[in-house]
Image 1 (cartoon, rainbow, N blue to C red):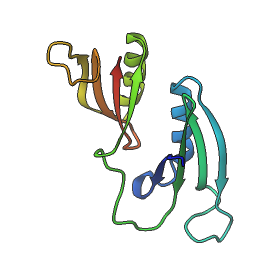
Image 2: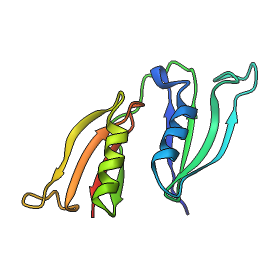
Image 3: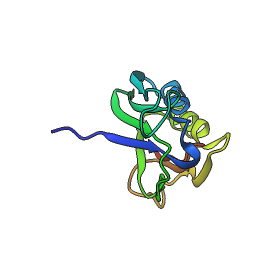
Image 4: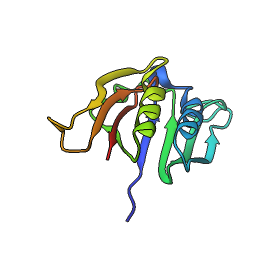
Length: 140
């Protein structure tokens, strides 16, 4: 058995999946785009500019992605987030900065929480990127 995070871009984010894949793989080490399959002309759910199915790796962890132009009653929620354990202060600060700026937002500021530690590590922050994906970043 294998589990994989699957992200669906709909609504205002439809059309931004390929941009997001390139953004994420530029931030994390050991990352690459595995595949991008686009809709064919006239195919239900999208057009040739949209990703029907894609996969990419962030630090060797697989993610899958799709987007479609259906009018869904749901979108991405911050209640589900990608939790990233970082090994250095520079790494956690750099990644947090890239994800939380230019349209992103800070939900819990990146700070030292050694005295009232969340139980995760030395430094922790929670942000949402410009695509609405929620990230928890933690310094081990």
